[in-house]
Image (tube, rainbow, N blue to C red; front, side, top):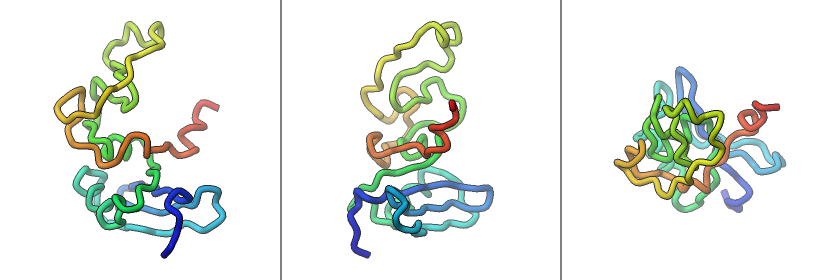
Length: 140
């Protein structure tokens, strides 16, 4: 299907039974388009890579939307309770004494495997990831 990639984003999400990827139109003028469905599959680096290959992500470079776990997997971050869990900065989750007092953390300079909880090469650029609206509205 001919389209303008900048008008669409790729939403990736998983449930207990499957992993799904859907194209969403920016502005919701068009219905969502299922792109991939993987039953009995979990959110892992290998399966995310396969999905991106199958939908030809390298060619179109859509923005990718998903929850924090999807974000961590796509950016090559270690899952779970890690010291550096933010892909934007070097926030130290274990420095409990500074959580309320320190407001500025150094920006993360790179996503280099083997450094600061990065275990894989990122599958997408950090600038191509966006959080869903329901996550952004949690504080309201």
